Image (cartoon, rainbow, N blue to C red):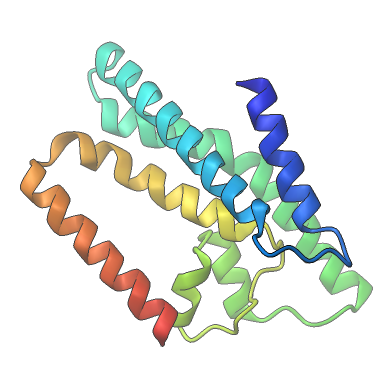
Length: 164
């Protein structure tokens, strides 16, 4: 798994090099690969919580928050301080709010935010992953019929965000 993740990371890095142009962006496919790995690992982690915890949903959410937020909050605070102290540009309230709540990029359009509203550009992928974490326990407990309805609603919301 380590070599595979390294290869995916290298593809993302190569897709961001200046002056490179590809007919197909392998970095985007690599990010999807990371999401598949994440989904597999989150399913395993949630199963562990179901087996060992009397309140697996609560414990799963707390585990995800305490794994992601401390490091992210530190990076966000340093970035915010850099923007304010260096005078690069003022930080809009909407930008800070989007960062604090780790909104996926497509949601910004629903909330009338500018196209590139992130102070920390990789936050777009954290937003997708954080929202995936929110849905994992629900997928484990809701009936199949509601999973299908949820999939359609999410697809519709995503398309609406992309076309607005």
